[in-house]
Amino acid sequence: MDYSIREAKESDMPQVLTLVKELAIFEKESNAVEVTVDDLKNDGFGEKKLFHCFVGENEGAIVGMALVYPRYSTWKGPVIHLEDLIVTEKMRGSGLGSALLKEVVKYGNDLGVKRICWEVLDWNEPAITFYEKKGANVMRDWDVVQLDEKGIKSFLDL
Image (tube, rainbow, N blue to C red):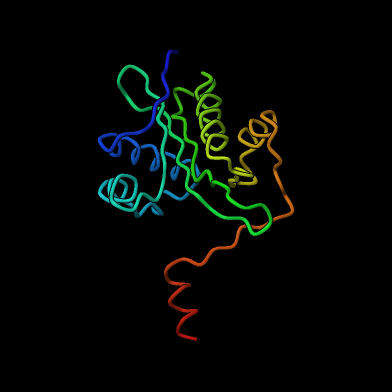
């Protein structure tokens, strides 16, 4: 299948959100998505740009995306975090995921970052295999730690 990769535009955000929701269903978290199209537009294209996004397009439809944002490592310096790399089911195996990841790596290299990091669910063996084949180090001895909104409020009320 043919596809092209480009930087996302504000007008792509409805289709990007559709991909995010598709990923949430795949990850068994279908009700977890709270972000809206307006949030994506404001946060990615507003005054304070919080993320950078690439999209994969096939026949005029957004069929893949990669969203990254800057972080800072006290050990390494500037890094970027790949929040999501999503390829719609019908495009898996087409090379689109590799092309999107390559675009992210080129972007990080152009920025001069010291590392690109992301998480993968421990049961998503196809993704783990994909990342390892690309040379990524899947660090299985680290656990992700998060405070959600409820946890933040609870913490502050202690």
